[in-house]
Length: 268
Ligand SMILES: C[S@@+](CC[C@H](N)C(=O)[O-])C[C@H]1O[C@@H](n2cnc3c(N)ncnc32)[C@H](O)[C@@H]1O
Image (cartoon, rainbow, N blue to C red; front, side, top):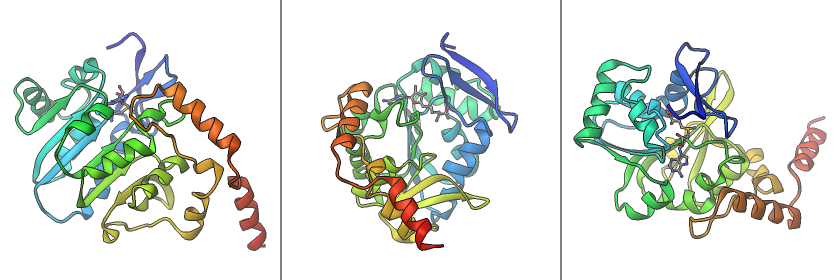
């Protein structure tokens, strides 16, 4: 394991990773396995039974792919994209069902239905002609790594979705929701005990069980929802953050707090 990465026990007992340099977790402290199931795989149960092509963006140590292998029937292919090869190798023996770990390792050494792309998703997405039924998007937080959440990348990702595909992420920040809206996707919330824990998006409205409500949509017309821009998919994270900050400073859009206050006033 890289020196900058620490292993820690998450609240469901499964192991997660923490990056000391980025000061960022790879997996939810509430449960690495729980997160993969609730935010990425369980929402896919709505899909009809059919051969599934999956794109796992930011594979890490593969909890999302492994959980998909555990619960989804008829997986036709999984394309896993990850920049850190050490993590992919680590995934062969990391805290999961041994048979599934072995399947991953065998597929890495001798590619069968799981394919590994050890590269930046921004490069991979432009090269592939494939269309997917399921997309897992699991980058670090946008304010740390906006390059994996730009409106430009999300638009490219949306082009790789079949008409009935589902896009899943833990992320429900305003700039990401706004980028999904800009890609003409219907957007919904992944809920657990009435709390939003993630986002689902699709070109097929019928696959969205808990759509954003009118107020959620109104919040996307505020400064807080200004998207990250990376037109040629090649900017550094710092540049993307700086450019967005400039755009926010020069924006004439209302602030999020303004419309929240307005809403509270209307309801009292
Ligand atoms: C939040 S972690 C994902 C955890 C992972 N899904 C798992 O189950 O272990 C984010 C991952 O994205 C990878 N990453 C960062 N930038 C990337 C990029 N541009 N393209 C592909 N992967 C990237 C990081 O190395 C890291 O492993």
